[in-house]
Image (cartoon, rainbow, N blue to C red; front, top):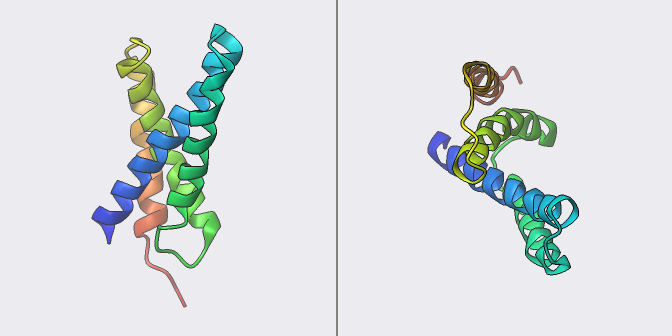
Amino acid sequence: MLAKTTLIYLAAALAEIAGCFAFWAWLRKGYSIWWLAPGTLALAGFAYLLTRVESGAAGRVYAAYGGVYIAASLAWQWAIEGVPPDHWDIAGAIICIAGAAVIILGPRVA
């Protein structure tokens, strides 16, 4: 289950960041309005992917995803935008991933 959840979260992060970047590119960088079509599809894919995570509560899925999103955003910043994360970015991402792990892996009382 953990491997599947990890893959879903990584795919969701890629979809969300790509979708948001499409809107950023259109509004902030002057790219064609046609960037919004794949951006919208990517954001819809992101929302769908989060429904595939096994959990009894949607809020828990979203909360844990937040940590993954933060780390993935910094990876995107480095890989796509060419801006490497500094040590504060890395420390913050590690803290967020640790928090996400506690949320997802913590024992649940029925």
